[in-house]
Length: 453
Ligand SMILES: Cc1cc2nc3c(=O)[nH]c(=O)nc-3n(C[C@H](O)[C@H](O)[C@H](O)COP(=O)(O)OP(=O)(O)OC[C@H]3O[C@@H](n4cnc5c(N)ncnc54)[C@H](O)[C@@H]3O)c2cc1C
Image (cartoon, rainbow, N blue to C red; front, side, top):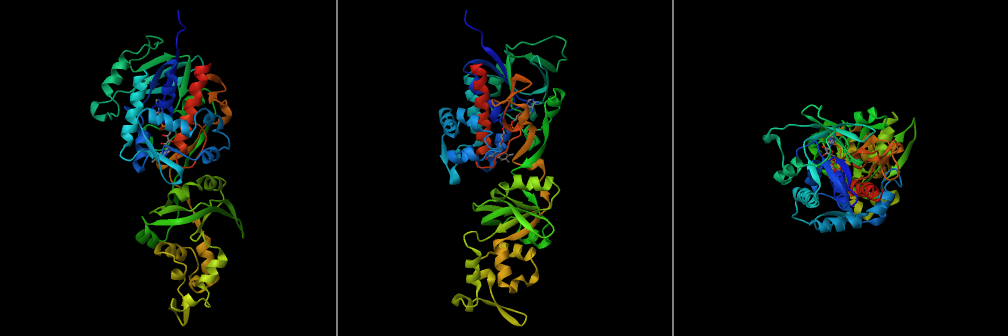
């Protein structure tokens, strides 16, 4: 008689859980549980602005994760090339866009990506249990689920639902007792992978409510905080009125903390990127990169500031030369202010309306007649930051399971047959495809550890 297959429960139907289930399915009996009525809901949200599924740069992939080195072992098991090959094999061709960002080929909708991933699970006989919320787990590997009843009109189908339900009814997994209430089921398994997500966009199912289960099991969790999110700035009303929705292109931004008199850069983001002026402040790639440092400053109760360089390609000396009176270009570019004629700094430095509006908003009035101060403002405009945007609207979060409570393969130190992967663990990465790559890599390492055990 052959050895019986390991039974593995995977909870969480996001990319981490789905991929873990797929990896396991070659060698194990796999049951995937999801509390929503469909899989991959946050992926669908992520895909709205283009699903940036990984990044092509091997070097960046090794450098971006926080804490440093946290993702290395997972990337050794399953890196960006492995992910591209897998996507290709399940019928999702990809292309490389700017900054090495990888997307599904043009014309492929995110719903099709979720569908292909779901089909890949069904083809490998993964049993999918939708509408099942994990409500408790115990050290003897008993997992209790609440079955969520939904009316049909509340259901969102991304997968061939009849097929899923058919498999669900023929489930072979052991049910522990008959005394459960009709809406609660308890299952046992040899191993479990939890991929319950973070706490942003709770409407997708990533509600972060699972932390209570971990507290009950004495596993340390950290409060969720937003990452890859916008920042609140107290704009003068005219910025909101006339400039909201406009981009600030080719800028660099760094974080500053101000003591009594001095300002010190915490982090320079030397790469030129784009930010968007919004009603509440600023948003976009140039902002996301500085959120970790801003979060640290704000959490420490320090006043936080950003410094925008509108002219990162020019040194201060070069800017001063452009606006000096001796410069022949300047004779035709002057403005009359009160009694004096001054160079038209805005045009001489090729600043646009939005850049000029921000300079005016965050400097003294006389700056328009002071060439040194004006150039300094164009290179280093200091803007106070009120706070980060709320967690609900963040692209990702930090917090969740403390990495001190998990082994290198993401199993719990207190119970190595239970693994935690994806955004529910306290790690961070910038946008650019690194978040999803991290989820896939963690899933592969956890699944391979179970297969090899
Ligand atoms: C607007 C937006 C844009 C984004 N764009 C990108 C991008 O372009 N590139 C990128 O790399 N990343 C992007 N992300 C981030 C990416 O979507 C997430 O990092 C990723 O989805 C996390 O995967 P996960 O599997 O860990 O968790 P999730 O995708 O959050 O999945 C967790 C699942 O667990 C289920 N669950 C939770 N609790 C329970 C429970 N008790 N019982 C049963 N099921 C439960 C939830 O319903 C959910 O389906 C974006 C995110 C957002 C919000």
